[in-house]
Image (cartoon, rainbow, N blue to C red; front, top):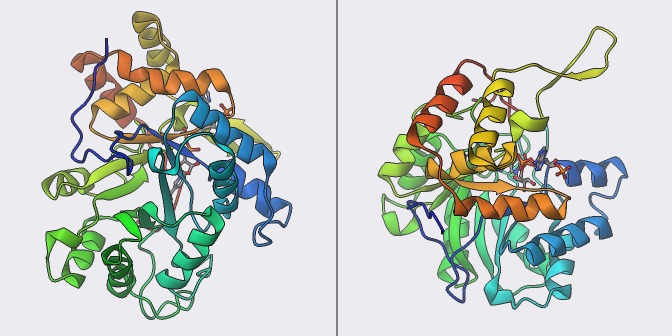
Amino acid sequence: MSYPVQLTQSLTTKSGIPITFGTGTGTKWQWLKKGRGEDHQGTIDQNLVDLILLAIESGFNHIDTAEFYTTQPEVGAALAQTDKKREDLFITTKYSPGHSKFPALSNGPKEFFRKALKDLGTSYIDLVMIHHPFFNAESPNSFGYSLGSAWKELVDLKKEGLIRYLGVSNYGVKHLEETFAAVDHNPEYYPIVDQIEFHPYLQSQSVGIHEFAAKHNILIEAYGPLTPLFRLKKKNDEGKEEFLTHPLQELLPVLSSKYSKTDAQILLRYTYQKGILPVTTSSQRQRLIDALDVVNFELEQSDIDEIDKVGASFHYRGFFEGLF
Ligand code: NDP
């Protein structure tokens, strides 16, 4: 039995298949490439290609990459190698506008888009987002682009039929309002997705974002939904990383045992039942299969409320710290 959730947007592949949770190619993979100095050489990490192929084989049809990750070529290689038709897959990438730490990688969205099509070996992209809102026309790293002018260039590409859907990432209410103003408040050209960090320890990446997104039919996608299981670390006095103790360590095993599911499945189902589409990843076949299997059970509302409550007693932000 399946327990689907009504989301604010029902996105599909070009052939009309509803999209699954996303499978990511960022975080670990981008830093592995950067660590080897291969981030801008167009090299291909075969381990990542194999992982994407494994995710597709496990049932994912929604693949998430970004200019900044430098993993578009791996997604392109997987598209070339899989038996799946291009129109049965949903490819998401993100324009990197540059911020205080990292300069923009392209001179504007159009240049980024030309490179993305080439890297991905495709004639269209299903969903293109702006990776973050931490830039403006005066920023030294952003080639003079503002939130509004960058968005309008992407809208032009969508009008040409080269992009199926437009979205943003890490945007708060004021950034979305600026974007709406850039298109004269025409909802036809509003973002339909905002991909943000979400997990029980960061239930609202920025103030009021979930309510505002719901009001404007913007689907929230969650990155980092499994954060409580592996990301909570700090350096000890000897400079070594150690895991933090945190309150869900007690609740998650209770719920896993009650529903006969893994801790990861509980967290993914929690995210999904809150009307948020998870973008998750694993290098393990069984974990990938388990992730998609969460459509087949339902958490009681009282258990969701309990995760909310326990989660709210602890705070953890893994990305863009200090910029909100
Ligand atoms: P998750 O929260 O899903 O974390 C993935 C990690 O969880 C992997 O390292 C995986 O390790 C581990 N994991 C998976 N299953 C389990 C399990 N059952 N128990 C314990 N650990 C598990 O997602 P990410 O934070 O990695 O983000 C997903 C994607 O979102 C990224 O790849 C990227 O595409 C996107 N993203 C977007 C950002 C943005 O600014 N827009 C920022 C960050 C990410 P293992 O391989 O060992 O299973």
